[in-house]
Length: 314
Ligand SMILES: [Zn+2]
Image 1: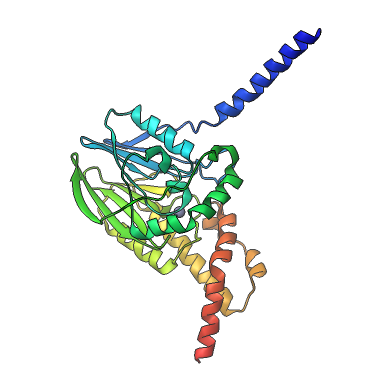
Image 2: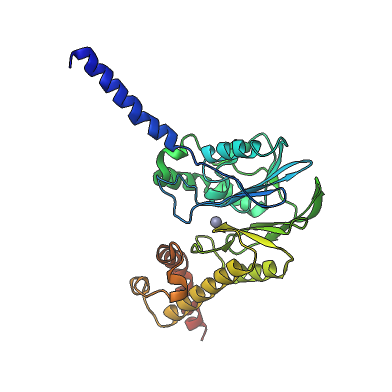
């Protein structure tokens, strides 16, 4: 091979090497129609990684005759932009408003793709975005790498007002709850019966608890269960037409609460807790072990503290 041919081969090789990297930065977002006018991008039951780019969350949209309502924007600028293109492939209606269910980064880091429309969240969520957005971004850049390019945590600017209003033929209710975080917004479309539950409901993917208040969360699940809906879109896991996600999340949280409470009462330390087996009903849930271990780190000190303060009171 002469010198020139070698250079051409090298260039060709470089080109083919570069191509899959660029092509790989495609979330391949395919909207799934789950009810009239209502679509979900169903994320993977995985943790953030360089292979999934943070496509681990459910986002969705409702097409009304007065514009599109978007629910959550995914985990990166790229996700938000690609989501918006996927919405535009379904409808000519412009995006009217973005509703963010809570301040965790996989639910709002795609906001840059919607910066020209009102982005709405509960006041507590907006505060959380402002306070923790930077730390979340550091973490996601580390875990998802290139996918995060040019992503900035863009906080919602408009405060959500809970209540019911008719938008373009859809009777939409915004419900203010808490427990997964300090502020969790559920969106119920009474016209179709679709409930976007955010991360108050997980299905076949273990619940995350960095900002959890378990008693509040259980109360929120009771509220959701009592509402009239036909289909639930959990924050993570397949949409479904019954209360199985609510039941599983409730069962897991009750077990977690009881387990940590008992361990604290018994004076067990964290390393001991990390070794306990998960009950069979939860062991098969995606990421159950990792999330349980994380939950110990998030929550156990408070349980220990409660035992100590109980002891001093006596
Ligand atoms: Zn969350």
